[in-house]
Length: 340
Image (tube, rainbow, N blue to C red):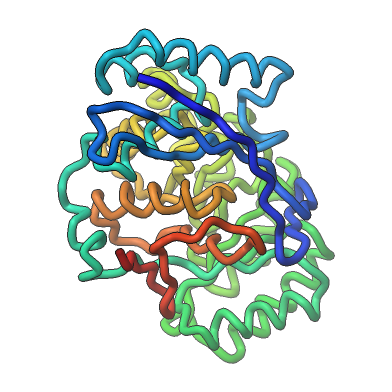
C-alpha cells in the first residue's frame, strides 16, 4: 500500500469572518491511497487540518503526515491501514474520506439512495458575518434560494446590530417559515451569555452553537440548564477522542445537541461513536463541514446520508471557493444532491 500527499490552497470568493478569525484562503492536503484492494486501484481523500482550531495544529504536523505515509508502506490490507494510522483527527479524516469515496469504508449501505441521485440531503443555508447591510443581503439571498433553515454566524459585529438583523427576519418570516440557528463560536462570556440568550430568545431561535469558549464545563452546564435557547456543542468536542471522555463531557454539560465535524473530532469512526453516545443520552445531533474542499465534502455527504439524518445538516460550504475541486455535488434549493 502506498500513500501520497499534496498540499493545496483554497481561495475564498469573499472574506470569511467569524468571531474567531478572518480568512481569504485555507490550506488543505489531498491524500491518495494506491492499493490493489481498491476498486479503481487508488482513492483520494482530504487531510482537512484547520489552523488555530485542529488539535494537531503544531510544528510537528508535517512529521505526522510523513509518518502516516511510512506506516502505510508496511500495510497489506485496508484493515491494517485503518488500525495503524496515527490517532490524528485530520489525518484519520483524510484516510477515511478516501476510502469512503472509493467504497472501501464500512458504512450501513443506506447511503445508496443519495449516491444514486434518488434523494437529497436537506441542509441549512450558511450566512457569514459581515457588516449589517452585507449580512442582510446574504440572508435575503438564502431565503430567495429556498432555504427554510438558516444558520447565522454571530459575534463579529455589534450585538445590537445582530439583534436588529434577526428581528427583521422575524418580522417577515415566522418560526414556521424559517428555522434560525446561530453560531457564536465562543463569542459570549460566562458572565454575559445568559443575558444575551434571553434577548435572542424572543426571536424563536432553534439553537445556538458554542455560546462560550470550550473547556468551561461548569459554566457551560449552567448555561445549558438555564438557557431559553437550546445549546449545541461544537468546538467542545475537539480532542475528546475516547468514549470515556465523550460520556464524561456529555454527562457534565448535558447539551441539547452536538455538532459533528469529523475532520476535527477524530474522523468518521469517532463521529460514529459520538452519535452512539448522543443517542444513548437522548441528545440530538447533526453533521457539518469544516471548510473542506469538495473532496472532503463529498465524503461527508456519503457518511451523513448513511445515517439517514432527520435534522438539516451543515453541508453548504461547496460554493465558498473560487478554485474548488470539480465534483458530483450539486446544490438545488436547500438540498445537496449527488449527480454521478
